[in-house]
Image (cartoon, rainbow, N blue to C red):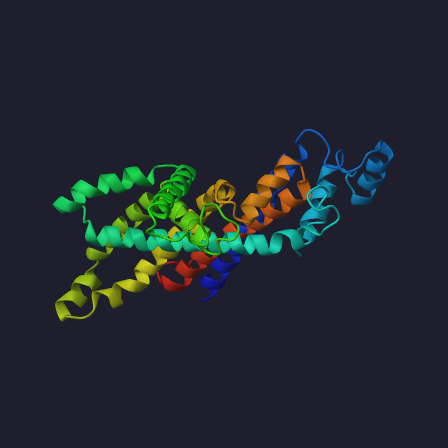
Length: 316
């Protein structure tokens, strides 16, 4: 028990340090960008200088980062300097970030279920699997933004043909992308994220490896010999791999979601980050970046903690 507590403390300290270093690099890169975030918001140099003094922008970089990081831990990222002048960043980001997280999590779920289906139906040692698996892997290697673009163009063209032929009334979400489309554009965007950027291929290879490992376990052979459920006996070990795959792939999906949200015109944190970067609204940029970093690190920590609790072989 003492070893478990010590191991847990070490992992928690490790991820806290990772959070600090990741945000230090991110904050430093944003501050190294040319120009000042106050230039276009205020017309005179005196006003810029006065506000910079009030915001602490004249302080040395270590002091600025320490103050910013301390407030960021309480989800206080200051206020917008461009997009919505004077509006607290968290008021702008909160709902949008929740939409992005739901989009990414749904895409991960679709991708994982798809990889499970492909792994079980298209077995590598079967003729059908040997024929179709390479097609699945090649299709998954296509960038997600291209899949999103093709999805929009193909869907709109197909619906247009049906409407012109009189066989279909235009759906409420047509044409894509549509702000009045409800959840439909998010569904199309999630599918593009779930397949593209090698997401489906990576999860498929991970599922294949874990199923192959499980099939060779002695306890699985024993369960099969007794006529017991192999699924029930193998589920705990498989779940460790599943949680790890979810956490590791979350990093890539958060990167790809920026362009996907822009293509599908989704009002998420990725689209807001794009708009904030264009006008150099640095408070919004670092706020979204902090939340994304925090989400990834928490997911990795949960995956580690889950393995730590579920696998008796892990003591540190």
